[in-house]
Length: 213
Ligand SMILES: Cc1cc2nc3c(=O)[nH]c(=O)nc-3n(C[C@H](O)[C@H](O)[C@H](O)COP(=O)(O)O)c2cc1C
Image (cartoon, rainbow, N blue to C red; front, side):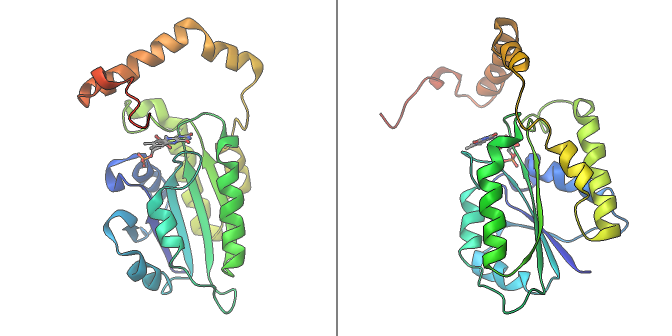
């Protein structure tokens, strides 16, 4: 089984998508080749994809959808004449509820079927924005689950449904969790983190800018 992993993040190997790929790969005995949409011509990459049995595309959720780089690649894909190739997706996002990626999941599933790929499914993981910012021990459980996903993939050539379910939790937050997040203490703590990032990037003073108004 020849699999190609694609990194669909505009941050390429510096972002959270790369961490997802690294931890998935840590569960494999033989590492899979990885190509970066940021660094490739979409037409050439679409041609190169034909050399593989399976494509695993890992991407961040941007504005409830896919990054533009991923869209550009999709526009280059042509329907296959038979169901010989498989495709699966891993979408990681900032918001906690995996329901925020359901629209994209529906699109990915429809696209796979229209292009005659066998659809392996979409793994969705929310609450991943800080993966590459906070110390890694905060994400120990997530990284273990991604490794297990890799182990299972190497054995079966598919995503383990139980792990997909675990990673997708919570689909929605409970009312209690929403109240907790809305509390002053939690939103203040959250603000401290984001303000630190804004300052580090030299744009703290411009945080209320509205350039499109
Ligand atoms: C421009 C932009 C738009 C985003 N939109 C969403 C969104 O709609 N929903 C969400 O849950 N997270 C959103 N996020 C958060 C990213 O999905 C999250 O930080 C992800 O881990 C980034 O992965 P990367 O480091 O590989 O780019 C957005 C981030 C950026 C930069």
